[in-house]
Length: 265
Image 1 (cartoon, rainbow, N blue to C red):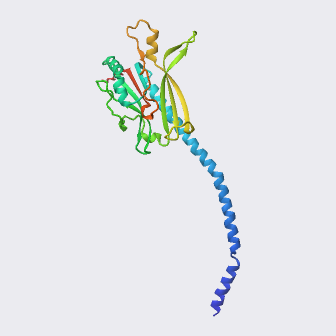
Image 2: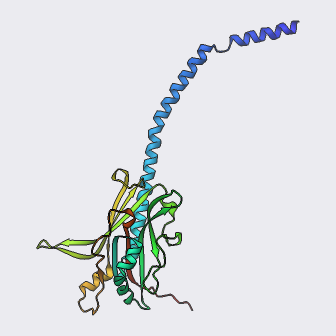
Image 3: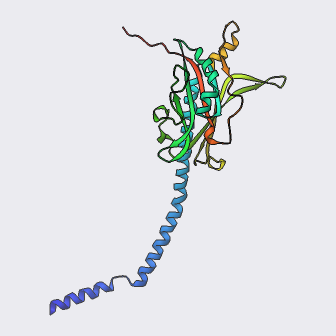
């Protein structure tokens, strides 16, 4: 009996030291207000970090693309750029130019091609542009088909997760004293990176441009003694159906000197 009274007395004393229902409700309300304040403080920081990360990735991707194209074509002896076209049309309508380029190759010079292809990204299931290194066959035709393979892609598709690059090339022109424009032995590379597959101006994350001087062509223009000077071959005279994104691909054909293989003894 005495033991039961002691237990009852202990529980009664314990209840006197607890919280009332009102106190619990007030504490929960204050805790909720505190948590809301923390979330409101952290959310802008997280959004800023996300935006900064996206901008950094877009900048890195644009620099990588510009550097790869510039490094590939700067020593070209001959170059022809076809813009706003697609795989089928460049194979048929540009065949004469490609054949002419192929005729300028020998054991010392090879014909190469870089393409900026508009294709489906299997991971995101969205269309985006990919930089591809094409294999040019002896006939001058490209070995790939209308859908570029992963083997031909210069950068792994995951490198462009969440971003959508678009690359355009144009001939650099210099204004002369008489007001006319003279074609220069240089190419302007413009890279835009978007955060959405629609690639609207509102989704533009990064915009950059670079200039590549075609060294061999520049030298050959200055040296008039060359019997067959290097040159930039004009692209297709008219863009092909520029209103269709699938037709806005770019193909860069260029003839480059083969590097001599080193021998060891």
